[in-house]
Amino acid sequence: MKELSKGQKLAKELAYEKKNYFSKAKQEELNNCFSFAEDYKKFLNNSKTEREACKFSVDLLKQNGFTEFQFGDKLKVGDKKYFVNRDKSVVAFRIGKNNLEEHGIKILGAHIDSPRIDLKQNPVYEQDGFCLFKTHYYGGIKKYQWATIPLALHGMVVLNDGKKVKIKIGEDENDPIFYISDLLPHLGTKQMSLKGNEIITGEQLNIIAGGMPYADEEVRSKIKLNVLNILNEKYGIKEEDFMSSELCAVPAYKAKDIGFDRAFIGAYGHDDKSCAYPALRAILDTKSNDTVMTILVDKEEIGSEGNTGMKSKVYEDLIDEIAEAFKCNKRKVRAKSRCLSADVTSCFDPTFPDVYEKFNSAKISCGVCINKFTGAGGKSGANDASAELMGEIRQIFAKANIVWQAAELGVVDLGGGGTIAKFVASLNIDTVDIGVPVISMHAPYELISKADLYTCYQAFCAFVK
Ligand code: MN
Ligand code: MN
Image (cartoon, rainbow, N blue to C red; front, side):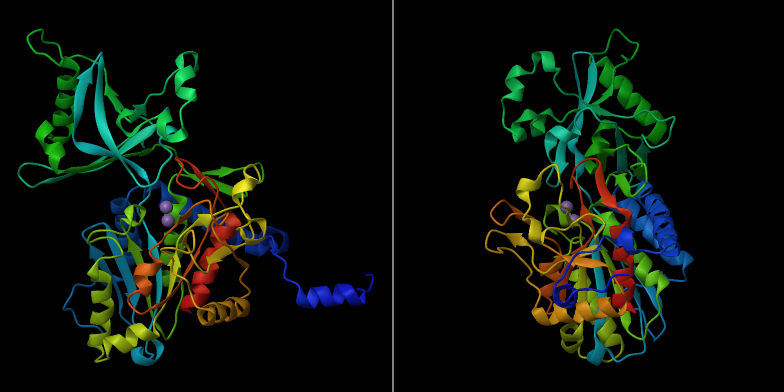
């Protein structure tokens, strides 16, 4: 090999360059990366709503020897516990032997809700040969993307007598699916001149749910009655029961490999399952002397609100309860704790280069991405992690040979976004955002790289070890 010139040597020593994980990884590591992706796809296909992700996570935790914790339970070193919050969020933790006041808790926090189309509380109506459902979208979506795609209905209904009925229609090959219509281009001249957010309005996101009339000339709204009858026969539901229901229309697509070389995964809900699953696996697959916690929360997509979102007191209570169980000062424990706020970030898309600042954008397959800060405009609403914390994380990743990158969302003045980071940080916990870069975030079908998913998992393992 030709010897490097003086300048080449200097550049190698001083300059930083992003690396594509695939170009450096050995065959064995690639095999591990691809097999992790297979596990992840199973999680995705069974976790389209926060309730399903919570259930899947609890099952996996149980299989790995974790047992349920409730407030007031005793704790001892070595315990592996999980806490379920209203079936929509779950916190897993492992008690290490290290002193909590000195070492704090190492926390991985991700969210398990994803943008979707919720049914309204009085959804069912009949019009012009159709039975339709009125909806109210959940999270920041481009509404036009949700028309003319196969939709599945997931959720649960609380009946008059308090009984809970689970619903999941559209995932099995033999199930029917649901559909939101769009205008044909032949009549779309006016529509196509509208602004993007007006092409399909919120009130036009009506779901087609049936078209066969009930065979009785005496009744009106025969098609609606027929749908209600089917729902009643199958699930025991009456129209009034929709008022106490949570029904979500989600894309009926399965997770699939994308590309001839299968480098990428296409799926609904990479935001934020592509971070939630690595965070869950990291607590299952590692051992350490520290106390470790994985928080999988709900409601991030609508601002971390309510008692299942990150703003809820329940997560602080849990940390404090662990501190108190070992007679530690809870304030000291939180002050010493560290959190990786695990959420996806936007990935540089060569088809839309203008919205990215190329020096500070996450590049596909270049590894899990740290966002030192989030927010919009002048970092408004951001959690801005300290240089000290960044330094600490860098050292951990360097020691474990993690391929990672640092970036921000996009061009400064164009937009922005938030995560759960600032709510964790407000508990006096050092927190930084980290996650998998996503192409077409919040679309019904998003894309990530298997390299970024796997390095995310490796990074979380290194952090909690
Ligand atoms: Mn997210
Ligand atoms: Mn999101």
